[in-house]
Image 1 (cartoon, rainbow, N blue to C red):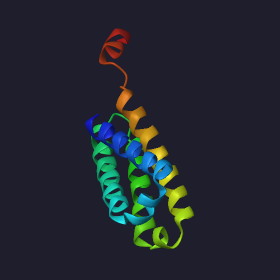
Image 2 (cartoon, rainbow, N blue to C red; image 1 turned 180 degrees about the horizontal axis):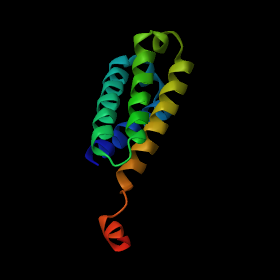
Image 3 (spheres, rainbow, N blue to C red; image 1 turned 135 degrees about the vertical axis):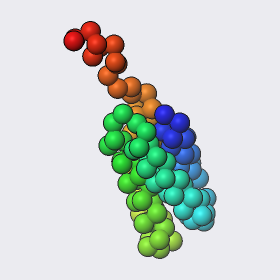
Image 4 (cartoon, helix red, strand yellow; image 1 turned 90 degrees about the horizontal axis):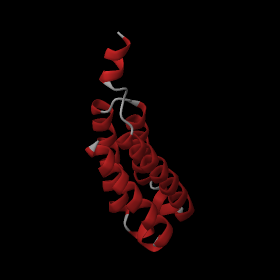
Length: 115
């Protein structure tokens, strides 16, 4: 749950920076690098500890997409591509991480009541 909440906060910050401060996004590639690494690591951790595994994989994939954007140099070459990749990756990561943080698996009491 904790990795999911941290991923949600990182994603909210990324979306806000992307939408509200485009020059900051264009000039601070280190911010994207750190955010991409953080999302990838937190997604991997969430994959290990959460009941459902696919939200963690989705968050990690969004982090890897941001990392690939920076590593390829495309974030420097095209600010429009950087905008859309970061915008959608952060939105997807934030939504999946928040959903995973709020979702709890089936309760043990339901399993014992059926027996």
